[in-house]
Length: 188
Image 1: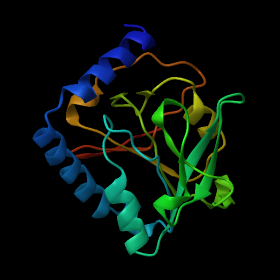
Image 2 (image 1 turned 90 degrees about the vertical axis):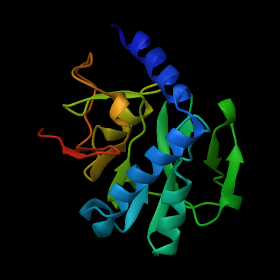
Image 3 (image 1 turned 30 degrees about the vertical axis):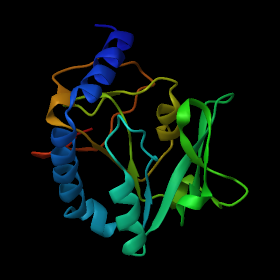
Image 4 (image 1 turned 60 degrees about the vertical axis):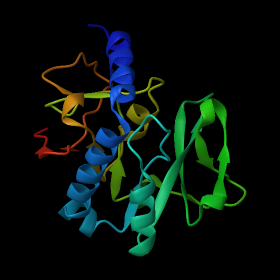
């Protein structure tokens, strides 16, 4: 299968979960993350603001705030296809942009450097056991990851894990994958 076909399959898969199944998986994934050394050792955590079909990041955002961690979220520049992360201390700092995405407003949020991010939660649709992923398209995260030195993790369901995906030279695998059943440390 080509990446485009994998992307369609991944979106269909995320939409296929019942509300109860989605909540059960999210709770298990979040618990695995919150109990991990990745979480406890990170002071600055980067995560997207999830859309309804994605795994909810609201518990991650609110847990980071409650624990006094610095929480940062991305703003996409569609022209350059680059991400800039901004500190988020309140949902009031978010604005609705294209495709219904919620992103930080540069007027009310402080941009932070890539070097400050200790743990980056990377979104995606389908992943393989080597950490390669099929994302939502656009290559924003692959561009960001080219010189990123922090730790990367993706939070997914077992159903989003496959044996092997097509990858290209510019694709960068994540270092860790957390599912509702296990934690995979990727050997790179």
